Image (cartoon, one colour):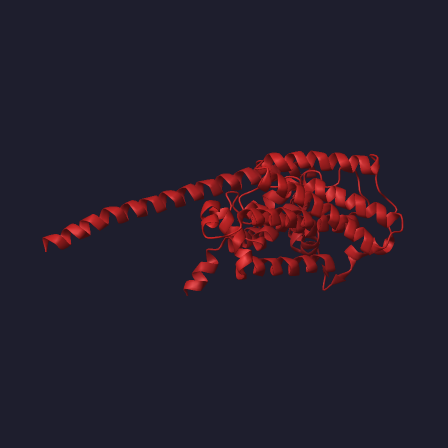
Length: 338
């Protein structure tokens, strides 16, 4: 019974309930939205945001931030796409994209962990550099004429679900188990919750944050590879603004920007919401131009709510400690009188 109450109070269940209520609410206005075909399109269409959100969750859980994931996706996509277009083996193109992610992750981690640069500043600077490199690499032109076989990968399905999204789900579950069931995985939440305390008990805080930035960038590179297959071409601005959607997906999924709280499962659920906004607007007969506006409003709203909840929890804990301190002397005095 206690386990059931704990599950019902979890942030992941709240996020899942929000997804269901959102879909049902839109379906009540336009029943076509709840067709099985449209729901599967919404899920399959969220695969890129899922990869980004799951990756950036590693960083946010450690109480840091990475706003370079959109540019990392763009450069990884451009590099892999040009190699594929020029006839390079798939393995070479995929390895090159992952190498881009690895280098960007190491640079971000080095700047934050070793040079002690605030993560928002470091990753914002790297975002500009990587975006500039993407323009230079592509000469400001679109990368087109990609092999049909690679583009067809994103359309391969099993039971209405693409192999890409199925793979993303399995990867999310594996990462969730790693973060919750292994000692090394629990380091991330411990570092985000209390970095000083984590250091005192022997947790390698710097190394954990470094790994978080590397994994985040690698997931962005994987998202770039999926982006190439799904879209079929790459522009110099590919992935622009995706960092905000990835962060919003994490926050909607219950990952606290203060660190130490949240899971990749919640981030994946948030990604479904973020990827579905454009589709929801179409079914509600609104212009898709409102997509970024709604994303910003959702992000601000959830952050404010999260901050208020944390403040309330801190005040409650403070009152409980104060009550306990008052009760102890009273109990001791009563014992002396007896």
